[in-house]
Length: 465
Image 1: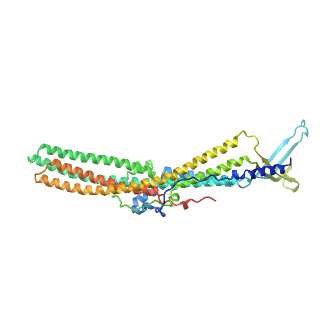
Image 2 (image 1 turned 90 degrees about the horizontal axis):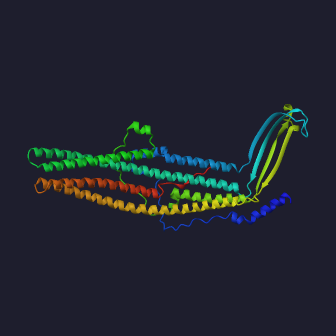
Image 3 (image 1 turned 120 degrees about the horizontal axis):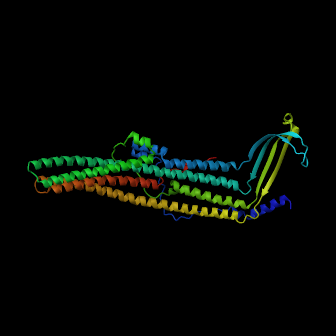
């Protein structure tokens, strides 16, 4: 049988199997809720808090954070894989040169027993003809993998920025609580001195002195607890922004003491563009598309591989006649390799790719479902957080009045000193609770911003040419 007939037979087989070979897997089916108009978050939403320290921390984290640097390395790796896949589409051109001196054997069939030189110089070209789209689909798969890796990096970036902002506000909250505890401790220290002076004059009993000491030590214990929490929070923030151990131990720099910022505007509703705004969804989608293409690459192994090759150069036994027309040599050829009996190797590869594609499909469906659940939960938690903040504000007002009344009743002789201490304890706890709930409301804002995509823009995904 002549070779052109063999190729024709394989070509017909490829045409008959073309439908199955190029069949696109069905898209993931996710039942979505009714969506509102587009809701977007500003790309640098944290700058709306107008806090220069916060902006500096975010920039430092984006530069130094270990997880983000690792994600950037993964993007570089995906870029390299795409460059390799693109290069496979083009011929491979190489050159070779050689020089040797040989003594032939007299005992060989054509032996002369002579010593001679051999000089060669040639350019070699090899090229695989991509009839079945294997190389093209491999390149497309690498491109989708690159997009997936870039989107995954942006998902880490969103999580990092959200964590830095949330951790910073948590630190501000603790430092505000520290200020409240210090002021309370100062007041109770002065109150203790006053009670001790009254006790020396016989105006109060030892019982009231011990009550005052108890209130003072309780306030001191509260302050110590808050300061320990500040140390832990600062360490967590240093880890997020990638502070080096040397800088951490030698600078002894603490973050500025500031009050919690006012809330910023956060988009309301469930956005129809959420699927585009969430980089984790885009990462899963591109991973699914890459898996689809990998199936095509695996199926291409069923078909024959056709390669072309050629060489052009010079060969001579004398260096003086090396580069002459008579020393010129060339060859051109082709090869066809087709699987006959591989005992299921290709089939197993195809099944493996199909299983990976199914896993990618499930991952995409899971990411979409998780995204909408996170937005729903974030909206509900945010609503309750602001309600709790308003209630806490009202509680502070009530306990302020109760503390004033308890002090007035005690000074008028109508109340007990214990009532005064209890009222002040309640006021201290109410003020600290208000600060904590204010921070939780800000945290709820950040969680919702993160769930909505954190200001990420899909146009940031730029593919390599």
